[in-house]
Length: 107
Image (tube, rainbow, N blue to C red; front, side):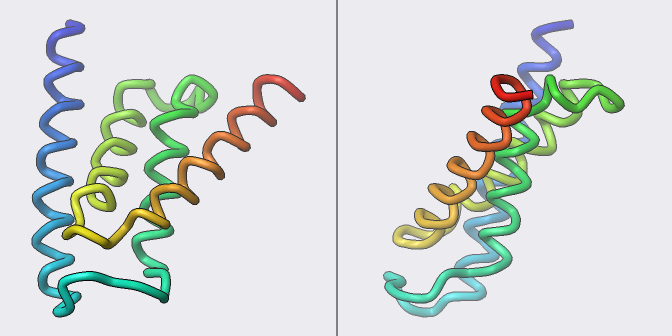
């Protein structure tokens, strides 16, 4: 069973990376992006990292489903063309880490 779960994680990461790369090449024409933050990528990063890091804290959905969805969403941001999505990924990790600390340590 564990091998199947790991396979679903790997497949969701690969599919998310490919989809993120395709969508970013369609959306952005410049080779490198400086300045504005992409709101959609930020939302995907925050949701993805939150689901991936806090899957044990979400009790009404099995952990392997939340991790698979989270890995797919964060891979869409990580898989964007070079120079895009790095700030959104960093903010997503910070917010997911804060949520994890609040839910496990403080509460």
